[in-house]
Length: 496
Image 1 (tube, rainbow, N blue to C red):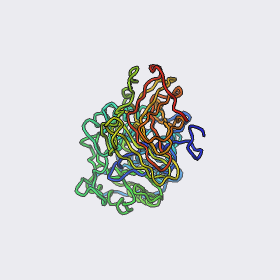
Image 2: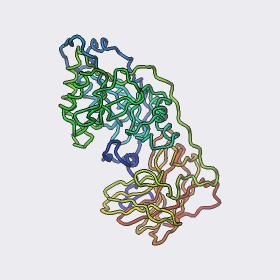
Image 3: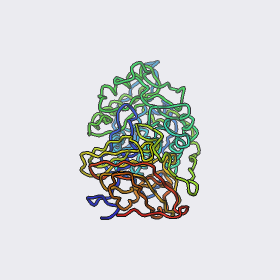
Image 4: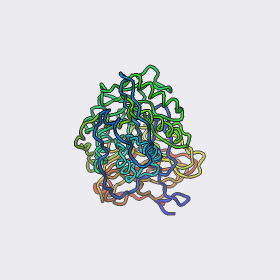
């Protein structure tokens, strides 16, 4: 059997979308996994234009002609004297490829939206590609940032949070987009996270779930102020999904019109899948048709976030570069799994299942009297599960040097065969599956797995690895170690 294949002959590659989506949903719900297998595919460099439009006053917007061959002609109306001006921004998070259907509907009614993207997911199955994003910008939609890999900024070390925000904007700029608008991936927003977003050069940052709707946030304001008091935590609705009706969407706009100001609607999936985070294309089309008619010649205008906030694009700022471990030093954070982290997992470690199976994770007594990670697999049909360092930008995943080999080890017990499974990160922050070690035999008592990797690829800047479980059974792991082989006297290759 090829060492990089599972027992069915398929490469044991976990879906990267699953790895990044581990943990609770950014509202109260768990994130739904993407159905598509996910790793980042290399995309050809695309020449991209700026995604910004100059700020436009309400008069200019009212007088702007319909754009595009499919734009619907609408009659001009005159609002009653004293009617407050209202801006409505249609915003979309994460850049899933079903949002292209939403973009087509926006184009149909000559409306523009703001698309907040995780640049680390671009080109991954289930997400937009760079040509998709370029077309959005060409059609007048705004491209904004959403962290590189869907990060909860308030839960991570400051340097990692800076990398998530700044390096995401660096990627967008390298692709030709002058991103000035940002949206948080999770609802916890602090003064520190606001300062990070501002320091990375953004002009504004959108929150979520802080505007009154027919669905939630009763007692909240019906809209953000025309001049927000806090540009780095602007108010917006909760995520529009299956619980929302067309009437709910219309009511949110109508309530905002009474008060005047700025209403930001938050969308994720636009499809017929029926998920909790989905709005159907039929509902979205009907809403856009109503909204386009409402805004023609009236006191309500659909504007991108940048059109509302304005300001020039600031220079991009890269986050701090994590250094590799010193010679002979264990490169892994929390290698003994002793320090607790989020969601019941050790700090810096994540469980990553894929395929059709039902793994569970528990903390159990460890190899040297501390704690260990125990995986128990049930209902196995295909795929695998493993615990491995978080696929982040340097706080947990160790930095590596291109062309160097690394000695890996871990103590384990297992009822089934296991192997090291490896991923590497590129300079742009994207992760990809790399390779797997030879098989390791089951072990009733703690045994040490040891393996020296091949030279890491030329474009690799960080590494993550873990022992996997390919069948019903249990696997317990503890005391991981990783060091540059150039500083290691010898290494033992584990037997097949």
